Length: 441
Image 1: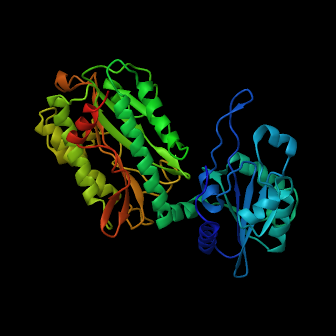
Image 2: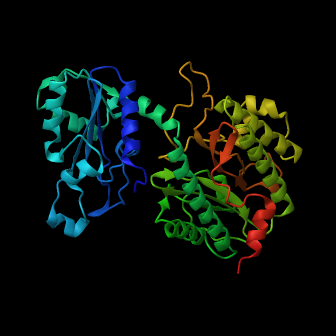
């Protein structure tokens, strides 16, 4: 991850978070840890999203501490010390001295001194509430270990209340600033370029992994982006598995290919799904079913506006999908009844969308404080992704439809004028898709 935002933005976020907390409160957050893949081989490091949101600091083995001294915010950053011998192997370490200037911290210390420095501040400032990371009702394991180290230094750390920071930071992250929206537009643009490359690489007798390689290579070509999540390249009946990830099957002439993939840019995720014919031309049945999903998605994007609830959008989309299946004589019944009885979940088992941001399935409650469905507000970013999945073994539908899965997904931001699509560069209409595929060499 790399930050393209200036430190004033991170400082503003910290200020907003502290303003939500009661007096005599502090925040302690740990960075992500390096994860071992096997033996001494580590996975690529990716910073904890909450930690990143407040600091933009890119290294592991770091702690941020926030509190308010009177009306002035206080920010302490503790990180790895410089180590020339280690840096020969792992690369440059920022170190506390440079971190103070680069990341606008009031005080910076070595991670080795973090517990002692934080314990001293807690006692000096008479902190009563400490907000940190929980896993359910318990402190997250690494956080718990660090808190024990702070408590061992004595003082206020032993008598403070420990509370979950997630509800507060989630609400802040739910509304994206214009700077964040710009980063998500770029993530959407690069994600769309990857999907175009995937369509050009998908040919009969190639493999799902051929397409995965093409889309991820295209991500990498643009500002070094990595995938925001594991790429799904699902051919034929594999598309009926929502989180299919084997990506090892051959591409067969006459089948559809469903791709769900997105690039991560500056920490922000793109998330696009497209479904298209491997041989370049939709069959009559494939086109008919595709148009059902495309119509539902087009209407959902049109209706995703300020004041609409998340549940309303899903219900309306589900009804449109079921009516489409009824009109094609794939299923029988009344669309609204199929949705209300949840029979529709047999063909449409997931939601119409999810929050999008620093995480692909981003933080944010889907309900208002009163328990009602969340009302869309300006600055919210989410996916819109209706789909139909007709399982191969489902003998209740005509045989010719079995084993077809179609999902169409775009990323949007809610604006005062309605939904603005962040991923519009990825071909989506039948004519756009077939025209691009016709140009394959």
